[in-house]
Length: 269
Length: 264
Image: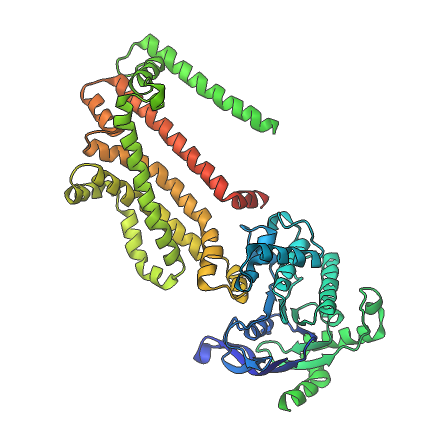
């Protein structure tokens, strides 16, 4: 459903240019949940924004459902890291969630109804009248998720969505994302710097090299569904995977042995 | 809560004590330059506020002088806001253009507006047009510069999110840029309001055939100190009321912003 080939993005020109991502290839199947991890500054967010059509790549292309992405494509929704900055403080929670529906739904009543349904789906019934800043951080991020789901997207991009909430809330939100994925046939890409999270939620973990970002490893996660914050994380396979991802993210030398070869084989294929 | 009540009561006590002190001193001193507040209030009442109920108790003198002054202030401010807010939003969203225009804007803002009055007198002749032009020209700068600032600092994440939801340029302007810039625009409007009263009096002193400034100038020429003080007190009350009115409008329109700010 999503094919990324030779994706490169540089900021600036000539010798001073900073290459954020370099020749990234990846392919995501319909309904897959893929997490992207890497050390900070590896261009994770740039990659996500290129896929979402928010920034134009320097080279390479993104093909979503057979169509090359040039602008923000249909059926895309995003949840950005900083809920405090991505929700609009001058709009009620309900109007925030209804905002992306403006393009598709003419009737205001229908938009509000869809917004309420979306809020209910993330466990936030009855807060539609409130303002975002009257809610806790975790609830605000739920609103951001409800807003992303309101327009019934086929592809959901999440950029470090749970970076600014506490650990307990973070686990609840991870489970919320998994439930949403189960209930709707939705493809999700999550950028994260949390290694446990990247393994816990995903079908596949893609590890990027430190900047300029390239695909270092593409690891399938063969953990049973449904996942459970305690039971899943006890499994030897989980521990093995998180250790491997951790090594790939932190240590270049080890990673060259453990991860680089499969990634290269894939990108050259 | 109780702290606020005490401070509210005390504010009025202090005000009343101040007026009482002035009253005692002025009655004792019998200075012809500083009439007692009771004389000023009596004069204000007789001159302006003893009209028929059908005219909201305004006397003919009040309708002939207060209303024109008020009209000039409000139309001058309205013109300044009608130019300053849209232009400020346009410039705030085009950093390159603003960069080019910045020296010009800073120069125009730094220009004391009273120096422009002779130009306006030549352009518009003495009268309401010249007065409104002076007020509008003087008050447009705080509104314009504050709105530029507000529109320029709209959060990038908010705009990117809107783009990801495929809101059109127009929708992004109406739903994100304008609401985000409004608090700053209001801050500019507040500055402009107090400025507009100063400019109104100034313009009317320079050349008008009615208005509060005109009455002041008359009072001063005929050494009518009680009338002069009456106009000064009236201007103070007018400024206070207009400011309260604007504050009320701001609280109504920017309810989200004030409560939001209190949280942080």
